[in-house]
Length: 261
Image (cartoon, rainbow, N blue to C red):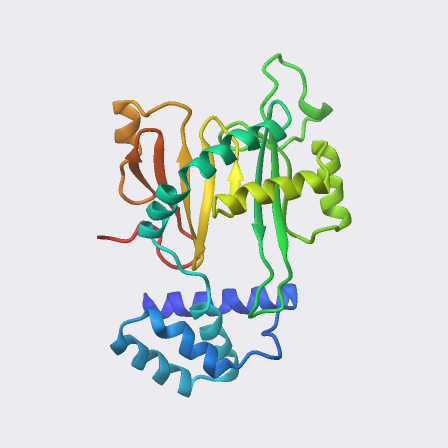
């Protein structure tokens, strides 16, 4: 199983780099990057990684560096950030809802420019619309795409460049401007978070970790006993307190649940 996972993640890495023409920056000292990246591992694991790296081929080495240099976070950091940034996080939730058009759900995430890879600053925006409950056809088409939660997919766009025509088109559809983006980004930065999506339960992304992501689910009211039980599976969700649930979303590879104590 371990070999299958390694093979899959290596192929996944190659596909990502080839699809987006991503390379390591020319000024990156890869040996120094390896040394810095393995510091978070126990000493015995560091020795294993260095041994594996020395005998690896060029592409395998780049894959190892890519995986090792991915951002890393934890449940503790997720909790500490909430305790330190609670007012800013709650302000982000309240202010963001004012920007989103009625009957719409908008997910937005800002990814900063990579200091290691040739990846510029990027923005992901996904726009959904609540289903028309009056029996009228949504957007005048029988071919609208509905999610399992019955939201209608308006547009889904990953890794858009600031100032690109694709991004401008989405902003216009939401009646947003570049100033709107700047204000949302400022709110996220103040909360030390990276993403937000308004729904009945607001989801605020705290940090990427490997291929996974740590987030907060913020309810409008304190959770009921039934809700507390439903959001206490210990894997994807952990009830924290009052109206806050901690969330971990696993990626294509890597951990799929919160780390154990």
